[in-house]
Amino acid sequence: MGEKTLTRMDLSEAVYREVGLSRNESAQLVESVLDHISDALVSGEQVKISSFGTFSVRDKSARIGRNPKTGEEVPILPRRVLTFRPSHLMKERVALGNKP
Image (cartoon, rainbow, N blue to C red; front, side):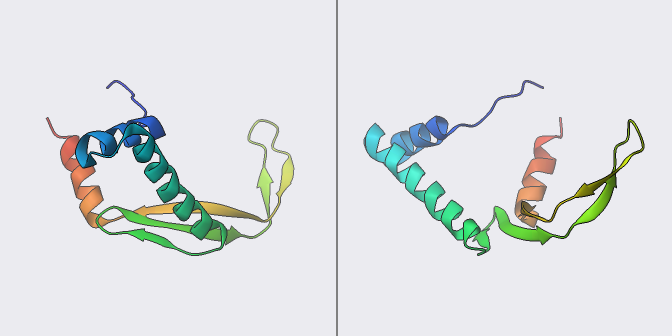
């Protein structure tokens, strides 16, 4: 399976083709949407996109990890992590895409 990456440019090109905005306006729209999503996540809000999934930020506490190579215990600092939980519709769509 060839690995292709969907980029911001691809998204703005799709908006340009399907909505009819200029290329510059399409790029600005995509940037604006991504900025709104990022800002909401930074402030601790959950971002739910219907039929796609939910992005949220989770606080993980400190813990002791282990270097698998040496077996040495290493402290892992507390941190915030971004999580994504796909909707059931997205899960189904991806699963059907894997079928021949």
